[in-house]
Structure formats: structure tokens, C-alpha cells
Image 1 (cartoon, rainbow, N blue to C red):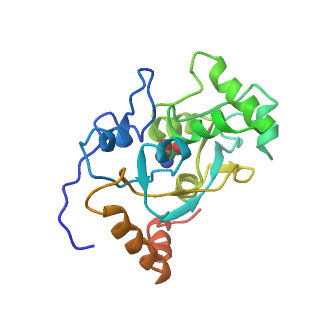
Image 2 (image 1 turned 90 degrees about the vertical axis):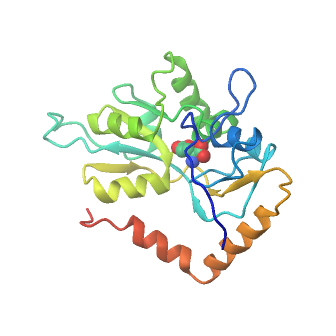
Length: 222
Ligand code: GLU
């Protein structure tokens, strides 16, 4: 799309959730309070957000998955086996697990009617919020220490696993969803329509797939 833009970071570093005072924060808050016109990020399309902003067509599809560090001999845990499934992770208490606080991933667990997911949410909510991390960087740091499994989006997990050979994914995807850009509800500039048609065109020409392959490819793949 041929237009000029000014790129800024959301002040609080969040993607966006409804805080305790009933205010939207993060990039969603920036749209709601007129501080930005477009949220351009790996921003998950969710029902609660769709009520306050408008999303474009998805530019990428993904799902939630669990990332953990291989036990290995180096860690002194030679007799500890890697988890084969999410159920195995949930039925033990040696390794803690959690997700980004306020993220779409957390929202997924809040909404899910699946019994396993409910059990996982009550674990995360039970210990003073210690299972939650502030952002993906903190999640990755805890994973690298070995006693934490991080639930986040498969796009981020795929990227990390291609670069850190000690990491692996436990089980498959817990859901299926998309990333979209977001704009203010009923934006006067018809930005959403223009962005969506640009996204669809790039997708139809195979450009999005090519870009994903280019940027996810590690210099030395594990
Ligand atoms: N993409 C997510 C969001 O829009 C943040 C990352 C995550 O949920 O793990 O909130």
C-alpha cells in the first residue's frame, strides 16, 4: 500500500487486554483512545477484541503450543524424560508452566470449555501469578533455565526451536487462529478494506508464504 506512516511502540508493551479498571491497554487501547490508526503486529484475532476494534483478514494462521527445554545430560537431569504430551506436563509438578499475562493465549484458557485447559488455567491462577510472564522474552528466559514450559503461539515456538537446538514442542496445537492488523471500529479512512485486500492479494500471489519462509529460516537450522 502506498502511504506514509509513523511507526511507534505501544507505551505499555502489551498486545492489549481489558485491565482491572475496565480500560483496554496495549495496542488495542491505543486504537480505542485514538493514539494510533493501525495496530500492526502478530496480533491475535479474538472475540473480545473484535468487539472494540475491527480486524483485517488474517495474514498468518497459527495455534497455541507448549515449548520446553530438552532435559539432556548436561543439566544433570539425565534420567528425566522429555514430555510426550501436554497431559503429561499437567499431571506433574516438577516443571511449572504458564503464558504471557494478559495475552490472547491467557484469554484462550479463560474461555475454553475443555477440561484439560480448565485444569491448566487453575494451575496458572493458583500460585500468586508466578506461572505468568510479562512478555515473550521473560518466557524464553524461564524456558532456557529448564524448569518452565511456556505456552505461546506456534509461530514464535517454530522460530525459537529453529535457533535453539535445546528446545522442543510438547504435543500439538491447542487451537487454530489468525494474526490480523486492527483498526478503529468503523474507521473513516476505510483502512481495513484496503489492508485486507492487500493482504489477500499477497496471499494469493504466494508472497506471504515466501516471506514466512525467508524470515523463519535460521542461518543454521537445528
Ligand atoms: N499474539 C498474542 C496476542 O495478540 C500475544 C502472544 C501470546 O498470546 O502468546 O495477545
